[in-house]
Image (cartoon, rainbow over all chains, first blue to last red; front, side, top):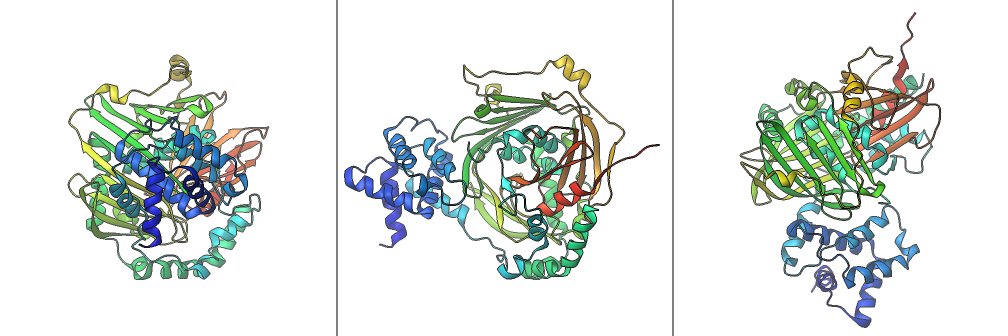
Length: 185
Length: 336
């Protein structure tokens, strides 16, 4: 069995609240060490929710409390680069439901499959004028602009959406940026 | 002055940027826009306003992935839509006729916006989609099965660094959008949306369009009379741009009262036919809770700055260089 399948198996067991004692602790530890695993875990639950349409199932479950507690005791590990707290949010709202594992993983793969167009060329791309122009501002550590809480900008964004051609073309979908839980939410 | 310095930087980098774009997209950036693809885009816009449906989708932006449900109803009275988060705390936006209600419980805030008259949802025509060819290559892509439905892929590839690219997957019969990816000037995907289910309905029960408000939530509805009097109006511009990125033109000018603000903002919209950029100009002398410099919300880039005692906030689904360009080009109009 390759590593990925093996990971899928225990992630699934963890989600179904089937791990206990030393095994549970060991899996939580590896989950906290590995960004990739954490993303898979979060994606996994988002897809499950999508399939089940019910995020209430696991609210207050023992699993959610244990995982959240374990994570909140590990501030160093939890602040790797960006948006680490979003993951905690996913866990807080996760739906623990068995029997959809196969479909859920297929869903995640569909979303993460490689783009059909060629990827960026790193060397040339890193000199793109947009990056330089913005870096010149030197106001924020992230040259592409800091991701901000969306509530502050909601009135602007509503007015923008109502007069933008994206809304004309895609209906209400541009409002995902308001409904989305931003960072630190 | 600021605008021209950005302009100089951009001009000097232009050739390099185009080389990068050509390498990123290969021969596609040179390719012609495909008439069939334009027809599909028109179909998408029509479907977005004419069909009633219930759909569930996953929205991914960076490491953040969330599930949302969209419910849309078209009746003789008009269009009603509701977009609601299905993970974490309840957040939702409801659009009914010309009113937009945002329920954002983290701040206990409920924003209710009257979009103004005439109803602007279709106020901007999908103007001359065929003319977009100067700034984008728009082409048919392959077929894919999404949420158990057959789709066709449409590629929208920018020809310069002032706009984002998109890949769209449209359902073959209805032409509804079932999957989308937005990619930045470096070809990196910055936002993804993927439907996991979609059901078309002739009739949507009214209760499905009601907000999900908890017993303790406070609803702050602005006084409708006041709203009506203040409303928004077409006004004489007090500001203008000294220059614009290629292909962008002014589409809208209005003066509007934002919720809970006592002086109006001047709102300009600039667009290239596909992407739109909004400029909000308001009189401000304090710097409390304002965003200065670059920031972003998913695929929306924001650039804020103070100028002549006014706060200028520029935002749109375009690269940072475009919003910054426009922010720095805004100038007050001096009348004798």
